[in-house]
Length: 542
Image 1 (cartoon, helix red, strand yellow):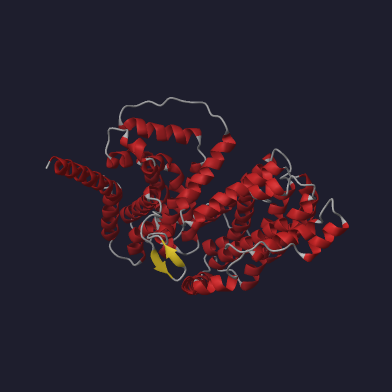
Image 2 (tube, one colour; image 1 turned 120 degrees about the vertical axis):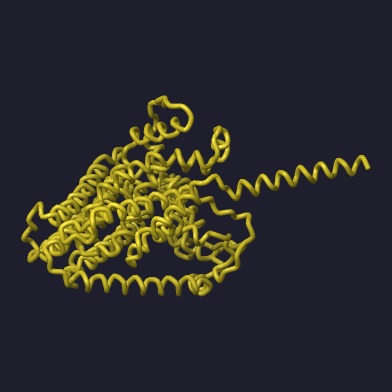
């Protein structure tokens, strides 16, 4: 946080460096001076900022403790399962966690950098006669360390939920963390190249390995494949992967450090601008804006596309345009296919009791990229008003294609709710109804997330211990998730299925109706202004 304070004097080391070498400055002294300037303009310490947000910190700690208790309880219950499906999942899922961590690390590295610099740094520092390697080395090490910790935490969570032993949890966490860190270091070593096709290919390869591991778990649960006899060597394999990740990571990190001086400024500032945009959207807790920024970046990388005319008349044209968009960019279908595996994996792990809400949330994330047309219509009011249809008709036409895909998803996953690979938990009609309920919950959650209005910062603020916040800013994070949980939680508590159906119908009627409170308020203000103008005109004649 900054304020109107006086500019601090340069540090003593920088003044000494200038006195010895007036034509150039040592990079270490320059970094120290930048840190000195930043801390000199701070009006509040980190401890003071945390003290004002004590309620949020207490809430995070409380929910974190509850989540840890849930994870430990699930680990204890799953570890008692000795069926072949549980043992195979316990053996194979850590492989999927490692591959998924590496794939995500490579994808994020290709998206952001992984070494980035702000526009100001690119203008003032990267064009100066300084060695970029010494300026950017700390950022490289910090990014690798953070990704290593996140990858280890992800693998620890997956192996814990699969019922593995504490030694296996630690070994696979180390393997995933070191592998993810090594992948980021490798991506940094390739950042100086103009073509990062190798990073993209490796990311797709590890994503395919993760998907194949999940399919293997499902096939074993269906008694299609015999489980591999590697459970006794699982700990050794994890240690080998950790050792290989450590060696590759060190070599890649050394190579990346040597190539930092050759990083082009455009590559550095491009990732920095993306980070700045996402941080601004995150400050407003607007996940929809973050999605828009990422889509803009993806389409900017694509460059030019061939214009194709769509067909149809009326609302059919809206549906066909969504179909043409999906045919042109079928990448969202990959996430949609992955979401089909979630109910089967949960059933193989013995977590069928909570499969409904988790599967709905997975489908919710997969449907969001398919609602690009609905996003445009809801955020661009002028475009929606230019069509001869009411908002409800436009919404219903925009979700036709995602709704058809959700119906296909329900037919694809209903064996998991029937009791895939074990005793039948439900009858076939009941399993079909449950799968349709979960599909509807995921679709309606994505619709709510997409049509959510942006935060109104001009509205009266709400006083909180962290300062004044606009209304709805905190709840903006839970939009979409609330619909998924509202519709599927009755299934967790074994309530009649018609309760979830009734809740889904109510949510659908509210979300897909033509009722728009903001537009009604806008029209009311216009009518009031017109009445005031007419009254003022009559008073002139009297």
